Length: 170
Image 1: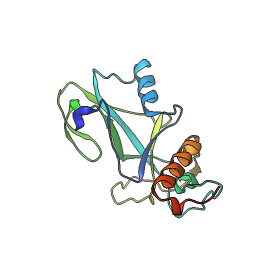
Image 2: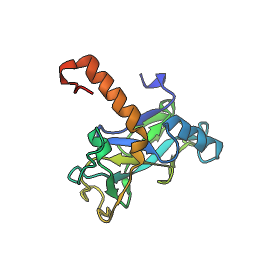
Image 3: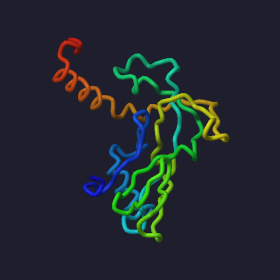
């Protein structure tokens, strides 16, 4: 099925690729192309660094969904816990955090700057895979809140359709 998609993302369920400026990932990719940072013909995909949003932080209870309540993250980024968006037709073999083999050896993966996009990884920062990881200091990052209205509306709609007894009355 991979060949049915122009782009494919490889992330875990607790990871989200969040563009900093653009609203959608496709808008971000198009902007990277128009600025010359990325090329569909020269590159296999895009690699993003992770930052950690620990689940044991004080929640922003004004927000409806848990992911929207976790707004404090590590100030630093992990270069080892990267995730990718790739063009599947250009990938022969994927690793967890990298492209292992490109179909065309002349293509490469672009490392995306964290001011353009980053992985929001909703887990406790740990050094077990990244000995250089710095879990402190932490900073507030409310970038995800730009999706709040749409996420909450979609969530309520799905719950209303599939589990009406569990949907709170507005």
